[in-house]
Image (cartoon, rainbow, N blue to C red; front, side, top):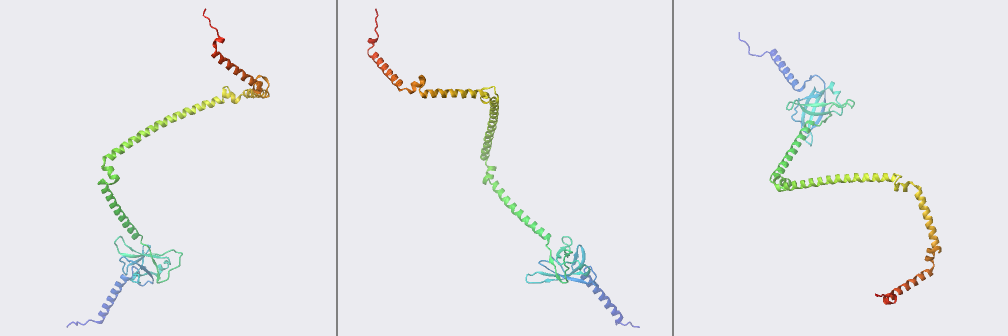
Amino acid sequence: MRRSNRVKWSELKIAIVVIFAFSFMLYASFTGGGTSIFEGKKFFVVYFDDVKGLTPGSPVWVKGIEVGNVKSIKFANERNQIKVVGRVRNNVWELVKTDATVKVSSIGLIGDKYLALSPGDPTSPKLESNGVIQPASDETEKIVDEGVSALENMNALSKQLNTTLEIINSGEGTIGKLLKDDSMYDNMDAALASLKETLDGFNKNQERAFVSLEEGVASMTKLTKAWTDSSGTVGKLLYDSSLYTNLAIMSERFSSILAKVDSGQGTIGGFVNDDSVYENLHNLMARLENLLLDMETNPKKYFKVSVF
């Protein structure tokens, strides 16, 4: 009996169910993001300048736990920003607040990309579905940029240093001449030697000055001690009142004598105050002068010399 080549309807239905189930499982594997396709989800929107290789279906993580996936990625506005729509399970959405942030991260250094969602402050209001979340600053990129800038600066500094060393090696400039010109070294060495001698002399003079100062201080100490000693002359002047008393008595007597002289009393008083004494003395000096002149003119009148 010949076997029929016609496919039975029951077999076709089984094939359709198997294909549908396989397709559904394949779709779920790409869109479920590690979550059940039957779970309810909330959507959020974030605008990036660069998604760094993020693709639809990439997972969304909250504190290291996969809670959703990326639904769509497309260019959005006139600034050519990229609009990324993500979805998160309802039971996790309660944690997402208005100050939540999102950034593109990777598993390892070159691994698959994912969205790292930071829920925000628990005390902040809850984010509504399809709400916009701000992108977080990428500290890794910032560190890389700073590292590149530092390397560029080091490269520029290295070039400048090489140029400076070349100038020095060529003997140009002060440092180059110091390295290449022996005469400048000799002059500096002589100058340093002279400076050393000057400093040595200064130290010696300083020592002498200190010695002289110490001797002066010692002398002043002895002199002060002598002054404070009542047995010495200065001490008696400072401490003995009898000397003051004697000086006071002498002063009084001298004042009395001067008073008598002024009043014309006594010989000195008469000599000072009596004009006749002056005139008589003047006449006497005149006569004496005439006598001496006459004796010089006529010595025989006053002196007789006889030999025999």
